[in-house]
Amino acid sequence: MSLSPDEIEARLALVRRRVRDVPDFPKPGILFRDITPVLADRAALAAAIDLHVDKLTDLRHGIDKVVGIESRGFLFGMAVAARLDAGFVVVRKPGKLPAQVIEASYALEYGTDRLQIHADAIAPGERILVIDDLLATGGTAAAACDLARRCGGEVVGALFLIELTALGGRSKLPGVRVDAVLAY
Image 1 (spheres, rainbow, N blue to C red):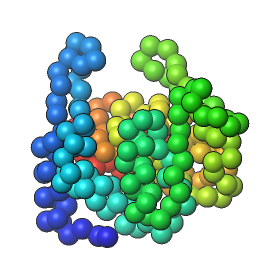
Image 2 (tube, rainbow, N blue to C red; image 1 turned 120 degrees about the vertical axis):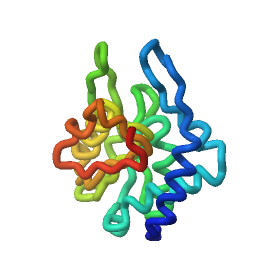
Image 3 (tube, one colour; image 1 turned 60 degrees about the vertical axis):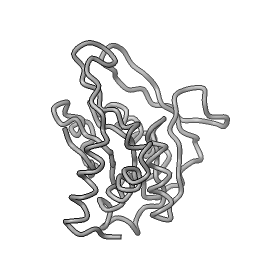
Image 4 (cartoon, rainbow, N blue to C red; image 1 turned 90 degrees about the vertical axis):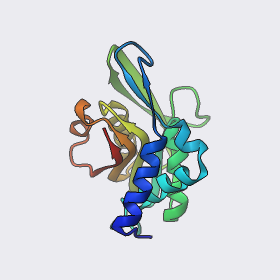
């Protein structure tokens, strides 16, 4: 599916209208971009998925697996994987996956966190698209890309519903094609 410029603009306007700004969440001074109204509105949800897939027009036949980052990356990742006829792989926080895992740590504003993937989730040489709802500082996405590569995958792109451009998350993903539906 390839959208016309007019179709893209109409879908972007709808999704943008549904993203709710929540000041001072989760702490004072933060403007939180809440996507739950997008998810709750069937037209906005369909538009958001269409826009994700449209970003991949040139890659759509070259993706074997979509890697979704816990938890909102699951929401868009599964829908995009289904549209691309690709498999779907979860990247989760520690202790959530039942089989052998590979783990990566990443930096947070104050400290570190970890992500895990099943060791057998990606076969060597598979082409991988990483999806999450938000690209902020890039640490989570970089860890997910690292996990996919350590499983033997080739990360061909990273896709987000929202990118907070001022936080420079792209810089943590060198050599990875980065796309976002909305940028703030």
